[in-house]
Length: 189
Image (tube, rainbow, N blue to C red; front, side):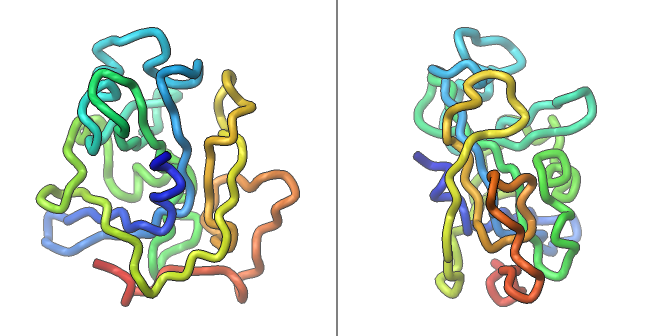
């Protein structure tokens, strides 16, 4: 499964001024065609066509009529499978600035115009490998949130010692600021 492997990787966007906006992926959710919470469950439409496309492309959709959600298509063509990027921690910024799918899309300036864009280093947005200096302490595996179907599946992962998580699992307390992990500039692209 791709979703837990993305924890600790960098989401990088080349801005129009040539600078890089980046953050560390700290929370993800997986979705697959065989389960009813997936947009591609038993239906292929113009709206979800990207989700059935080749892996490594962005699938971006509008939710609640106002928030964009950023997904990476995974697995294979003609099979709806993706990873929702739920939260990213950015260096030297408020710990909650990209905590949750809508805030993440807003901070990175991602909208429907980026749908079906390949996510590779030759493009404006890409995923970079986890920095070698980054120590992953513990990744929590729990149920997904904000859905009404297939809620029992443990297909959400997050970096436990990050304060940039959208919602913690029951019983998992947010670490104090003094002990929380934060990305540092030297880890960037």
